[in-house]
Picture 1: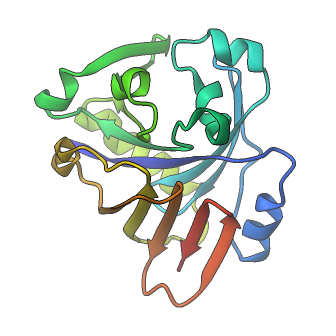
Picture 2: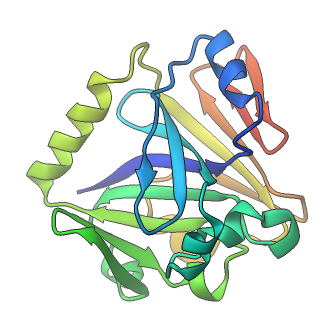
Length: 205
């Protein structure tokens, strides 16, 4: 089993993105910190997945961690992508062969694609390694917190570089446009209304 778990976007902690989402009828949790990574988040569930709005709260800690999320948070200076796609289940063998393992605790094992180290201008690509039963349990847990359930239909990704051809193996309805500043449009349903969450992130629903 392999399915999209969440979409990640770096934001400014003092920005008005939370107010914009809540005024548009989206629910946000209070978030959590990621020990050792130097990051903090808030999550916006849409159904069986969620949007993770993330920022750095401890730059020294983030710079010392193998994930180097500080590069993505400072994407305008580093040219790293401010986006990421997290899956649950198991990557196909061809993708899994290019991953390293990050286990922040014994019950939570991540496969991190090596492009995060070698080509950070691409979105962070990772998988929460779960067997089928645990994958279904996580899906049910996420869905319970979703409030108004929306069906993700498409993601438009614009960036200076194209996503690799190997991404076609993923259950990710993404179109990639090359030659643009980083921007992500996440579409739900018919896309009759649009919300500019940040200059880099747009939601259509």
